[in-house]
Structure formats: C-alpha cells, structure tokens
Length: 132
Image 1 (spheres, helix red, strand yellow):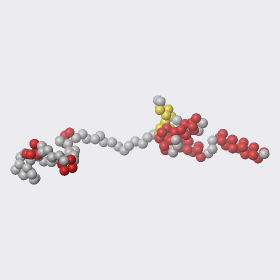
Image 2: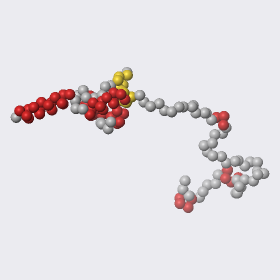
Image 3: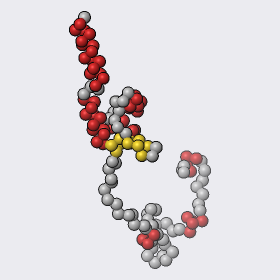
C-alpha cells in the first residue's frame, strides 16, 4: 500500500491501532499478545507426519519421448527410423510403447555398424565403379 505522502491521502487509523500503547508491551499487561510467525501451526497435534520414503526408484524403461531426449534425436527422426525398420525394439503395454534400456543399448551398438542393406548397396556401387 502506498504511503500517505505519495498518494495525498491521510492514513486511516483503525480502532485496534487506537487502543494500542506505543512501545513494547509491559509484563503486567495481561491483554498483550505474543507475536508469532505466520507459518507456525497453532498446536503441534495438527501437524501431520510425512510418510517415510526410501530412495526414488529409477525407471525401468524409456518412453519414446525420453528415449529421443536421451539419444538427442527428434521424435520425427525416431519415427522415420522406425518406419525404415532401423528403430529400437518396442515393448507395448496397453496403448503405450516403451523401450527397455537393454533394447536401447542393442540399438546403439547396431548404429555403429551400417545396416545390412546399406552395406550391400555400397558393395554393389564399388563393383559398378570397378567395372567401369
């Protein structure tokens, strides 16, 4: 709220402020209220204990989105590879598709070697060049 000297309006004094005495409360004042922190609960009985949990359980497989993120490829590239038969093996559970870590490792190992049909095309091209 803006100060009175900025807005040009006088500060309205509430009834509660009018009854208060300036300065710290005296020990003899029975109506004085102890200040408390705002987030402090009224009674410790209201506080619910959090359930004890162990360490987080790591996932057992990739979703297609997490697989693409982990391997730095776009989902469009993933589906293009899948359409050409070069994608990793998928595990279907209900309507969802997952890729196990083992299948992802096999797919990465297979990516180091060219696919068989690409090797055949390359070999045929070399033979044509040698014949010419």
